[in-house]
Length: 285
Image 1 (cartoon, rainbow, N blue to C red):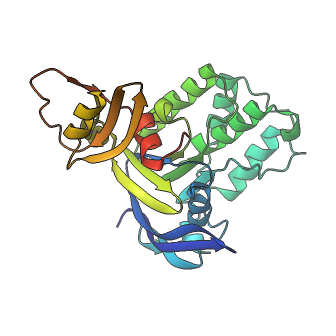
Image 2: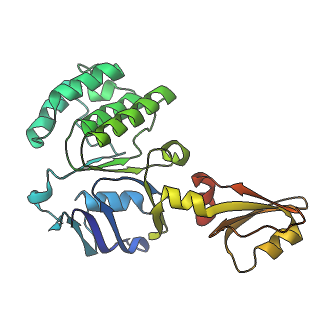
Image 3: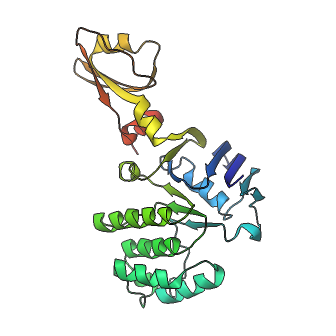
């Protein structure tokens, strides 16, 4: 199979189960949003997939090849990490040259062109870069690699609105240029909702859902009105949460939209991804 397969992966840290028997796959040729609160298990999963830590049980396959400590998958996957793993005393240009040594598909000329676009001074040392420009530096490395699977862990941390928009534009351009998979782990759900095709939601070490954005938005909705009328409408439906204000109540539902009462006492509304996930996980992101 072409893609990343995660099979029955469990990871514990003493008394904490970071991942609990997780099985999921990421197909080649899609943009995924890997979503969840802090501590949900996203970074642990990313670190296991990218061979930075090892699972207690289970396995990872990349294009059908076991990934654990296997150089055969080295050039297939790259992970841009939220954690700073770079030598702080090296200049940006030196980091680019070292990356070229480790990854045959790293395009140095593209990295330099993107540095100009972002106005990144390649003669600055990593430690001299602001938090935003450290993120930009890591983004440029990830975007300059022709690996078929690229993971972005909180990619726009510290970036202003213009730089974030530039990243999303460049990412779509890269995606359109060839069959590749991008996985974006982020808290900025609404920002990525227009570019991701599928969503994986993790909470408390388990996968709550994997579905297309189109399907989620089509089947998720809100119903508002008087408390008693809303509660009556919700019977037998998959309600993921409520909100109340005085005598009014809003119910958030996943499923086929049912006909509203003809008396006009209830109103139906769309639900965005942010609201959907807040209600599914029970807490604001």
